[in-house]
Length: 136
Figure 1 (cartoon, rainbow, N blue to C red):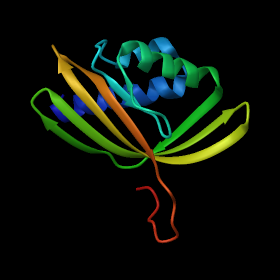
Figure 2: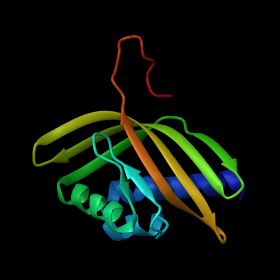
Figure 3: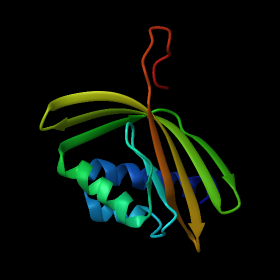
Figure 4: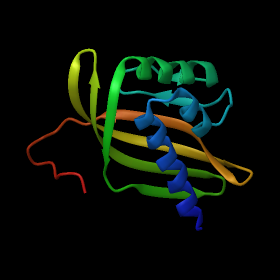
């Protein structure tokens, strides 16, 4: 398996954990380290294992279902760091009903031993304009 394939496998595991709404599955994706960072759309920056994992638990407790459609991912690898940029089209069903959103996500992975772990997730909302092309 190529290095890029390994990174994309870790990237897919993140979205599988997100879709599953399973905190333990999400924990396996992230590097257990005090320097990890997560920025959910509209949230403040969260740093460290405790705050990042607590944020996923909070999200998962308030949603019944999440479905993703991902655009084409751009992957950059340099040594033991990899960056994946992807547009997410997200549909979620929660206590407030069904909502749809588009998010531009930057996911950063670090290779530890033979495995890639997420160390940063940053999601920014995408505002749809009429001239914007559809997801690829």
